[in-house]
Length: 606
Image (cartoon, rainbow, N blue to C red; front, side, top):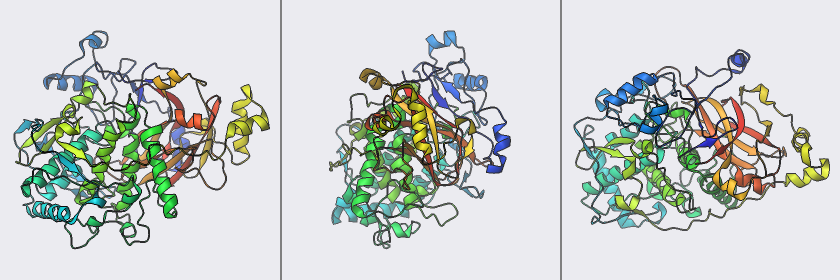
């Protein structure tokens, strides 16, 4: 069903494995002498999670394929009969909920400090959709709510915070849900592989359920079956500040651990969806436009395939960090976490670290808008639909409901918000047609200066060399501690409209090795001039960004290796570069110094 086609594999997607700790620049010569980075490939299929070469993907801290197969048989997992005939290790591997009795301390960050995020545990029941007769809970934009709603919301949060800490409905226990699922408190059942609900296709459904139960607990505490959380409308100019209801120090919605300069009345309160530590403040009109352009890239032009929007598949036993985030999970989701958090603190609390993020009531408002984007994305085109792979549909999580019941929830029951009796207020969407303007139309410049045809690759490189030296692909892996540009060959050009519809051309930045406990961000641009100002979201040349919100998986080495996939079909058309043999890829470090393993062009069918 889902597939990436490459020049060497007809249907594959990248599964990087965990690497040893990050190499410094002085260690890279030894690092390069090792075997080249060799990712695992696996077919995305409703029948199998095996690799295209018949071998099961492995990670450094997970069980062997044979052991995992035995475990899953014991759990009653289903097998794809047809594929298992030709591949005896082929399994249906939906992610299983954690064993709460085996929860262990979560890791805050690189300092090794821990947090006890473990919930109480009891017998579990299976989730049932609410009755269609239940009233709809309509979530409103936080900047549009009235005083009566604010009073009700504050009362509900106050009552939740007043519950005993060991009550699974308490604010502490609810905040710890995110901590446990995100910072290594749980192992996947039957393995030593950590359970992580970011960096893959389970990101959206997990957080949808999280909001669902949090919201229903609040409603039950104030005896209001219509109560709904607000959403932070950061994709609209009127909502591009921290909502005022969260900025009153006397309110239970306030959290003191935030970036003070980003609070209303601070030095830079206007949301920057393309945040980086070194970014200069833009005039309000320019910032609004930049934010709109970010949304267009992340929701429209760069998110035309499911794997790009949701993130890569995660099967039982896989290490989630390495699979690859979806567009919206990186930005604005990740950037807004970091933008709100207090980066002066060792672990960047509260919103700036996944272990502590849900301690800030603003977290739930932020994720309300993230969840709303899932609904909106499915309205932007006929092929923008949910996955049908049973390994996604049958993946499950555990949450406590408003009656203190431990509930097992499958993704398949979360796909329609209306069936969950949840809706969103209709507000203007200004980013759907936010087409950007190229900094320069390169094809015409190249044609007039150098000619066309077979010399295109050399010509593109020649133009860029006038501005900066090109980095050769043979120089990877390398530490990204300065801006680099690479002339990257394209396997195909001049594809038909049907071919483009069937397969998205993607730029793959592979072997990204980072310290997961640190803020990391770098931008990516195509055919960008070195004119002193690297391409930003307002420019067609801007392809996207990699973002890491600090977190930890387990004690020990904090480094891991992952991948960035960027959809570039529309971008190449807009740059008039669709018939070029090569493109110039520019990587711009913004925060941190990741190791980059390499670059390639690939094609994504789903």
